[in-house]
Amino acid sequence: MTSVLKNLDAAVSAAEEYGPNQYAVFDSKLHEQVLRRQAIARYLQTALEKNEIEVRYRPIAEDSGQIRAVGYYALEDAGRLIARLMKEGKEFESICIPVSPLLLTQEDFIDKVEDVITRFHIPSGKLALELDDTTLSSVYLNVNITMQELAHLGVELVLNHFGSGCVPVTGILDLPVNTVKLERMFVWQLETNPSCAAIAGGLIQIAKNLNIHIIAEGVETENQLNTLNGYECEYQQGFYYAPTMEKETLIKVLGCTLEESRITVKEEKKKMAR
Image 1 (cartoon, helix red, strand yellow):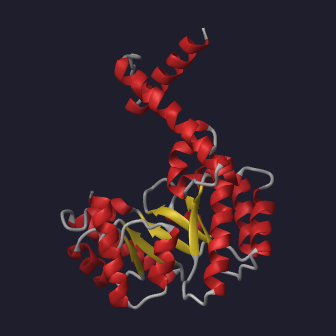
Image 2 (cartoon, one colour):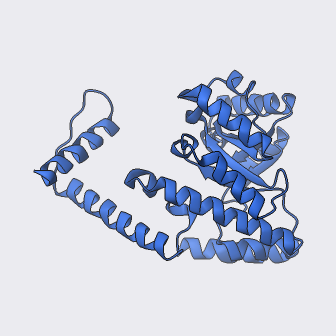
Image 3 (cartoon, one colour):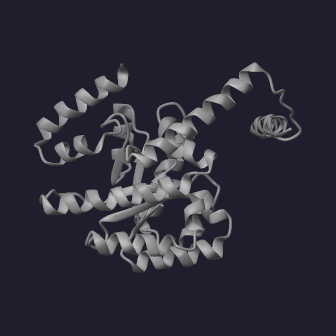
């Protein structure tokens, strides 16, 4: 009976992804997906126990109910990295990690953040937490209080998907948000949709007028880069600049010249292409 209920739950979840008034059949393909998720969850638990996990595993963790353990693992690792960078005299603005909405509702979340800041002697502004804008569309009051407490601790708060429409632009006026990330769909369509370019330019200007830093993510081409530069976008990130990196590679890049960093980035891109 337990397996039947699990199969039913998987089918219902699949149907929900298709939209309202849809159905899904638990067939061999869906069964393979369930087995794959179960296997990943097992490997993730082993990685947690052996301290082998990296933040990139977090999306799977949210589905498997392990997001709390992985989130706190990432927070601890970020604190340790900031302390190391400070000790070695590396120049950097902040280290940012994504935070699941589930973590923000944990009673001990603020205590965990404060503990990491205290133990690793993290200066104000060096630890940044990235929040999805959908976080603000639910339990707004509680999240607002949590964000105010984080800001009081000196944590930089980054709001993701700025301009997606999930939360009105005016929603950030009463929040201690330091930085926003421009919704990547605008960036991806800069070369093909003039309307997207106009909207992106407007959002960039709004952020600047509010004295909020803005990051355009998902930059992949030189044309996108040039368009964003034309709008005086302050920060940009994406595969055009560099792929995601392991901790040691990041430290290497921070400690070398611009030309040396380009060589390292080129090597990392080759690895991603394999």
